[in-house]
Image (cartoon, rainbow, N blue to C red; front, side):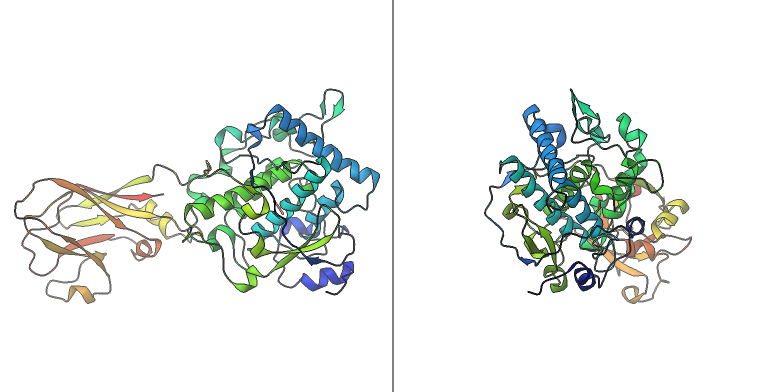
Length: 449
Ligand code: C2O
């Protein structure tokens, strides 16, 4: 492979760079890594050890974490050109977000690049500790109880020595250990509810819901009050705050968790362009290596894993909205405010269902056609009507049971958006010669999770 100089390196992989407003601010800074000739990375065999939440660290583990950053900072002091040192590490991030390297933010490279970055960061800290069992901790802000800057990162000193986890450029809220505003986690904008990778993690040219949701907001919240919010609030400076690595460890964990929750719908992209993309990093032995996206899609081969589960989850209780139901016309109407919210362009696909409560079983089996809006005129061919969306088939037995049940119909965005302004959302009409009578139910709800 050709030897890259700083400038060629940047030029070679700049194609396809995505916009990132924060990253541009310090674009004039030279944060290029030392020159080198990258070789293909061969993943070493490592013990698979669970990364833990900061809140779960034992006193010994906290001491080990602090020592790791003491040594990382000392490396910059003893040899500023050592590519593994603290400032060089921070510069790698700067370089990939508005510096001369390609911008890996704002697209589907966001998750895999940061996973690779944290992996080499962790390898370097293991080397400095001479302890291969060290793993990065994560800042579990998905849990309401941990939405403040973790206490071990806050004080400037620990006893008589400087706290290696401290950073002077933080907001007063972060410094004080105040909770983040709840607006960072709006219930209906939960990125973990994204139905596919493009919504969750982005595409070749767009960023996903987690990156542009809590990820960005927490960066800004942690950063200093001055424009451009140093350090965390500015991509070129963010990795100069040790909390950056714990913040991104949580982002990485939420990616793994999202994959785990639905291996089919939540699969990562399989495009060759995605899988074969590679990124250069310096490893713990100062070798410049290229790691491919396909090599970071599973964490276990990289020596770490996460305990399943996260608090930023699909809400356990779906949100229920009662709809207006007219039993005479057999129609359901969306309240205007709900209709407006549902027809607004929404990036996140949500699971919505229409629930009919207390459906009285008809006296004879029958099919009921369902229409968006009003049913076609009597005598018309119902199934070819443009607003026909399906049917409900109810089979009853010999002995009529006079009991009620609930019917749940899938209600996707598309389906709801077909309901135009005003008028009925859905109507039900007996198909053909149903002699079990009309569909009778007590109320209708729209649920959203
Ligand atoms: Cu590379 Cu949180 O940014």
